[in-house]
Length: 513
Image 1 (cartoon, rainbow, N blue to C red):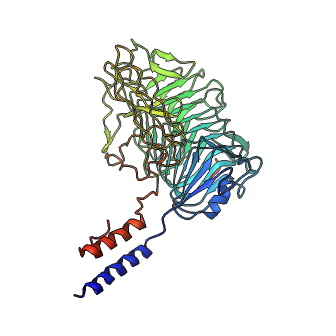
Image 2: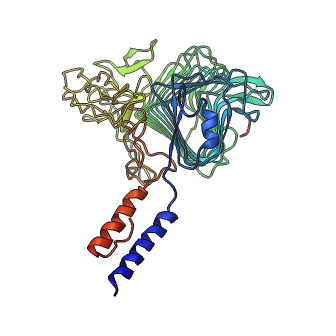
Image 3: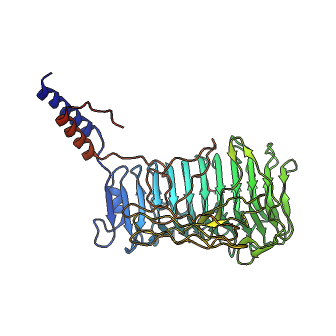
């Protein structure tokens, strides 16, 4: 074969491959002195899979719009960027109407959303697949509303949203639609809603893991409402009903009819506190035929623990659990608590482990929960629990926490995890631990991402760990819709090397109520 013709064919093939690949995703900068003054202008100019970096120094009041491109990563940098509706709304729905599929939103604050239908949302979710990470929703009619496909909310706060001003139904801190196939809420803080619920989800499957869900000074109705049943895991949460609630039930399941395919409810290792004079901790509608599994929970306060007569109820505690500070919502166990070592292995639901692997750290964070001996009852393990680093903002790559040292009754937490050039996550203090465990630092954003704590992989329905993150910006979690990207320049360089060395080219690697 003519070497020149062979080389030409290699170069031609490489050029075709380069042309066939999509252009590299861009990072669009928003803020004072940046390319785009406001986020909505950047959204209009963005292409699929671009990153929008919003400088927290900017004023974005009234910048409301729909977001159409798929696969965007929208991230506040140099702090948490704040979008206040300031009396404006997009499409009569809220601040951002997220229409694109597989969008990730990190480190953004949403406030002031109001519309004539009384359900103005910080985010109106309409696209397939959405990740919300390290965000803050407050003083909206509705925090987040809608959703489709898989929705993940983690390391986020929802407070003082909600109302029941519309005769047709109420608005809530968060409200997920029945188009959501899997809703995961973890390591988050939802509290102090006005009349509506702290968590409402019609999703087909719900994973509510290691959160603080507390009524506090609000007038919320239910703390958790899963009105259409579905497969639901409520594991390792701090749940509190305030004395000012408008409804005596704390967790309710299937009360609008169990129309979702699953009717299996698992309430395991939660600390549930009723500060009202009476009530029901876990209400299961009579039309639900599958026995609920209710194990290893603390039920503190007056009321019926579980309404379903045939539920599988085991190793729950209803006396004084000896909490560190009930009035201050610190539900760690004191030394000598009768809940220490009094639980039982909660077992499996199919291949899904019901044993909590994490525990909530305030505010809006998590720590590992290694079981020391027999598991404790409630949301916290007295011995061996380890606090993680708090989410940082705007840093470069972060580094992990160092090893914690133990103590007879309380160990010291992991050292701080740095978030690069801006704020990293600092380790909090560990409670308990004869020997202590490693600090949970993590990887931060590559260039303008949020630094701070890495989020652990959690079991999926199949029991296996989730794959490693493709995009480690933010808190190190897999973003819905994210995919690895290959540089075009690298492919061209490989083609040149192959031509010179004459080597064979290898194949390329909702409703209102």
